[in-house]
Image 1 (cartoon, rainbow, N blue to C red):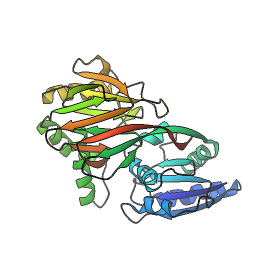
Image 2 (image 1 turned 180 degrees about the vertical axis):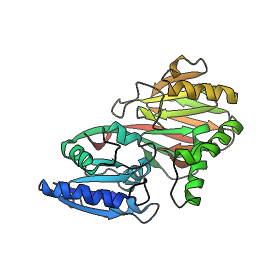
Image 3 (image 1 turned 45 degrees about the vertical axis):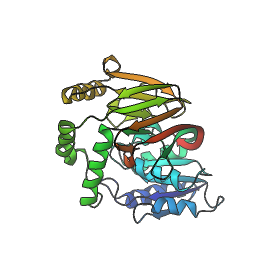
Image 4 (image 1 turned 90 degrees about the vertical axis):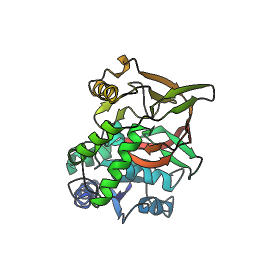
Amino acid sequence: MHYHFVINPVAGRRSPVDLVRAIAEILRAEGHEVSSHVTTGAGCAGRHVAGLDDGEVDRLVAVGGDGTLRELINGRDPLPWPVGSIPMGTANLVGRELRMPLDHHAGHLAAALLRAEPWRVDTIAIARDDGPDELALANVGAGLDGELVHTIAELRRADDGGGGYGRWVRPMWNNLVNFDFPQLNVTVDGQRTYAAGAVVVQNAYNYGGIFELSPRAALDSGTLDIMLIRARTNRDLFRILFSSWVRRIEQQKDVQFVRGRTVRIEAGRGVRLQADGDPAGRTDVELALRPQSLTLLRA
């Protein structure tokens, strides 16, 4: 088996390059081939996988956060190899779904890769009215989380890629306190339109690393779980966030969950979007489930 690692060198607090080197020693001792590519900036991961020959590797492994994995699936569609993850980001939504250790221990991660099995999952196709089409894997949000993600991205650029939840508390707090609720119209499966101040379209169970929204969401569920937030005050937002942290969000009267396979999000003004924790432009946007369109490696 030939494992090929695509490494984001600025992800996490431990050097991803050193971690992959240690993992590679274990894999080679088990008789496997290992190669790697270290990215040099935004878009590099996608360009790299686009240039790989189909038979050049057997298993592709993203080393970084959810954004690194998202670059890979947007760099080549469809990807001809099963894709694994060494979670080095902040939230690591997909890494959690793949049951990968979060301890950055080379032995634990190598063992997980060796026992991992191919798993067919769904993706989300994103078509914007004023931007390029792309794919997401875990979730897409419009409104509050879009604002938060754009703010964090600006801080990361200022810190040359560094940061973490601890350093972002104050700017995230400012976003919450000063959030200006937009008026979103969310149409599901072309049939019913809902009004909301924020919306999160889930394809994965976890959200933000520490929150639970829809407990039914799963990468292989064959449907999208759509959370509509109708809160109109900042106090309501704090209550909703707390309820999602303690896993009681379905009890909130100003939150509604629906399911579907296509979602159209429109607004009177361009509202910021996030996809898998990265900025993804602005509304208006059309989301569509692509069932079983990607193979991941689940331990």
